[in-house]
Image 1 (spheres, rainbow, N blue to C red):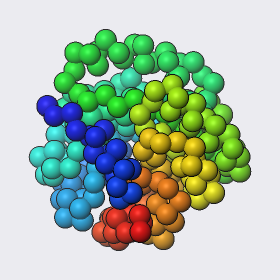
Image 2 (image 1 turned 45 degrees about the vertical axis):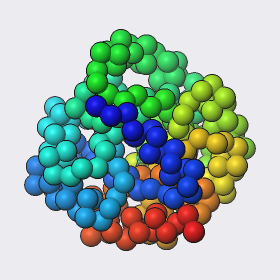
Image 3 (image 1 turned 90 degrees about the vertical axis):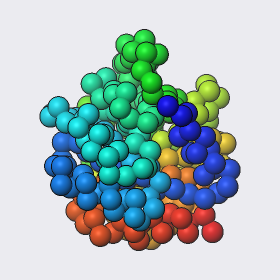
Length: 249
Ligand code: 1GP
């Protein structure tokens, strides 16, 4: 197993060449949809596939990862909503600490439980500061984590939080409005966070158009994550990828 996903994320940052990650919710995609998605992500030259969800209710994670890997060569990265979403079949793990919240279980408790298992798994572990941003209404992520998101119009809180994460040694910062966010994260907030930190910045939640992808990249996002919009209209994928790849310019 190579340990290359973090290095490739850092390269996107260093080269100011933003990337696009397709988010797959294993509960919501059957085998045919997964195969189509894997093949079109490869064809459109998307950069990563993230797999996970704030609440999974079917035992479909392992099959989902295997199907994706059989039909494309993109790195499959776990984006776990809970301890039940760990699998050595993936290429890497976003090892999340929910630094925007004050719920100790999601800051360090689950990580303590997972750590001995992760040591034994052949999985690249990427320490990630995860920040939920208020998006107009409660999301599954904010409800399930029992944490209060950062207010949408307080970029100074977001940048101080991201900086604290970086100073604590976290290697990635992921700002998330939550899946299906009514109001995506503002470019002002992305810009302020970008100026505060050196590590790669991942942004997602409620991004619906290529214009928004491009605007977020210009504001300083290194990776854009899209789930819902592509579930509804997979034909948007190529345009979204192009917007991210052009977004650094
Ligand atoms: C959610 O950032 C992701 O955690 C993606 O959100 O499904 O709204 O694109 P969407």
